Image (cartoon, rainbow, N blue to C red; front, side, top):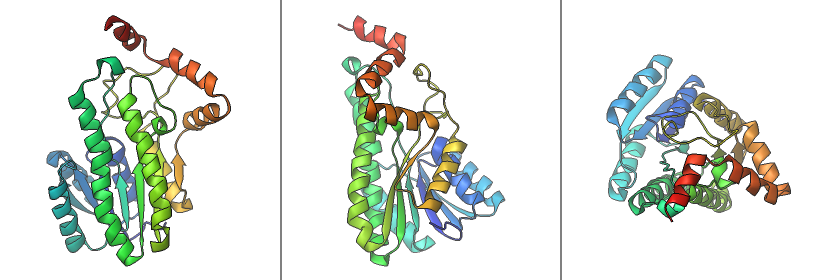
Amino acid sequence: MNIQGKTALITGASRGIGRAIALELARQHTKRLILVARDRDRLNELAAEIAAIGSEAVVMPLDLTQPIEVNIAIAKAWRDCGPIHLLVNCAGVAHQMPFLQSQLPKVHEEISLNLMGLYTVTRLVARRMAARQEGTIVNVSSLMGKVAAPTMATYSATKFAILGFTEALRTELAPYNVKVAALLPTLTDTDMVRNKRLFRWVVPMTAEDVAKALVNGLRRDDSEILVGWQSHLAVWCKQLAPGLMQQILRMATPRTLKEATVGSR
């Protein structure tokens, strides 16, 4: 995909990977960036940075778990900003907790935003892209969409689901000239993970690295963009030696969380 002169909509744009992607797209001369997140102040700060780079930024404060609000906002954005050529679904939330201690409100939050929020936006944008016979959709999954992580059961479940959703849409939307890809970063140094217990031996990458990998993947028209050597190694290990991968995961799980699980019995 040639992103120069195009319009892109990025969800989860106020921080982390979404923010880095918005800035990288601006540096690559994307004409217009529609920035979606709940935090208006952060979006305005990002919009100012994007304007300084030379691209147009449109701020859209929005709660993706509210379907009616999303429907109205997407229709308005398409009308006011013209066709959306690229949709990057990056909004998400992660809670780290042993499954036996999981709390239903947090489980519901992960499923509502990571899955249903993504589904709602994609449905609205994909229909318009299909009508125009043009567009690209990128769904941000995770290495945890390939290799499930202990203490992150619900988050992993949503990321596995995103991959399945992406694969199905890729085939369904191909006749309409709409491309669908998945971005799978490994652990990334963002606000979302800084209060998490890190898994042993995992070295976080930067959000900027993930954003650059996305741009390169778009240029190559990759269907899956697996980011970082650790991701490639983990997927390879799971495919060739699944038993070994399970042992590594058990050893890598943060001790304090394993101890908390035992203590809850």
